Structure formats: structure tokens, C-alpha cells
Image (tube, rainbow, N blue to C red; front, side, top):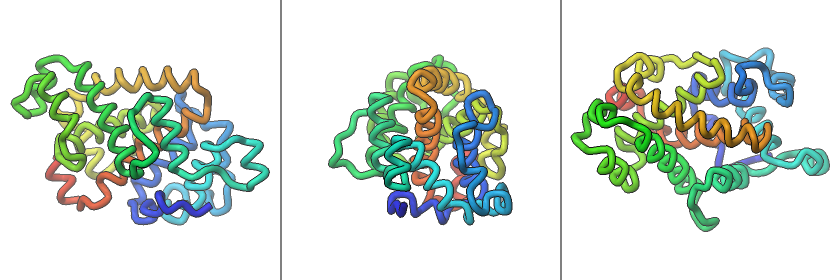
Length: 240
């Protein structure tokens, strides 16, 4: 099913698309997900992992099916739109939004809430290493209003995305993300963010296998949309 809210994925890099696909392919124990059908879809064997752009329609279709009811999917022969998936995830994680908001604003609310909770779990010295000259409480207040594409916002959400992969035992990050993962800022942020994600994991382990796909996928998609207009040089400057 065509989904205008996910068309930007066609312009994402091979590394970024593989990162998204792996949330569908692998479960929280790092093993292949038995409910996924992406790996058996047409063209997968020929294109994974080095030609991911050819698999964008497959990735979108599989995510939409995880978001829909299995029986209804069979009847209509497709899943549900990304917007419905995002709204369901926002409801599950108690992210404030209303249906009049754009996709971008709902995603922003999702990322912002994760960041504020992460900061809340940091120690005073952790916050100091972010070089913001702010206290923890001041930083939390600032994150409630800071622009989504700002360096601190990108740095924190990048940590979340890398930690999501690590939770699955996946270490395929490369390029700018790999460089950031090896730096001091990530080392400081990884612990608090890991605690937040462990809480999320517990939440959607209880919620069921569909949310074990939908939650990391929506977080990753929100992140990819946020950095979509950033060049590699800009990301290197922010994350380097």
C-alpha cells in the first residue's frame, strides 16, 4: 500500500535502511523474528544488505502489516498506514498528541519524551559532559522547547537509535554513527538511555510481538526524518 508519510525512505542511505529493516528482521534476543516475512519477500535475497533501496516497498509493506490485525490484513491484502501505527505507538507510550497534529509533530513529541526521560536518569556529571553549561533540571526544561534539529537533540536521539540496535545485539552502524558510538559523548549518554530503553523493552514485551517491531521502527523513522535534510558534513560536525 502506498504511504506518502514513508516515501522519504526512498532517499535514505543503505546503512539507514538496513538499520530500519533489522528491527523487523530481529527480535529483542538478537535472533531472527519468526513472525517476519520480509526475508522471504521478492528480491530480498538479492538485495539485502547491500542494495536496500530496492527493498523499500518490502520494508514499508511489512511494517504496515505488523501494525494491522492479521485477519484484516488477509482480507484487505495489506496492513495499515504509518500514521495509524505512529498513533498507536504514541498511545502505548503515553506520548501526548492529538489527531490534528502532523506526522512530524507526533514524531517530535515521541522523541522529545524519550529524551526528557533519559536526561532524568542522568547524573550531574553526565550532564556536564554534554557541554551545555546547564543543570539537569534546566536541560530537561530546555528540551521541552529546543528545536528538533538542534545539535543536542540530534546527539541524544542518535544515542537512542544506536542503543536500540545494541539491544538486539546488532552492531552494523557505520560512517558517522559508528564514529559517534566510539566517542566520549556516547559513552556518557549510553547508560541513562539504556535504562530508558530497558523500560520500553519491558513495556512492549508485555504488549506483544507487534509492538516489539512498531516501537523501534517508529523511533528510527522519526530519527531518519529528522536528519533527512542534514548533509554528512553537518552530521559529522554535530556528532564528531
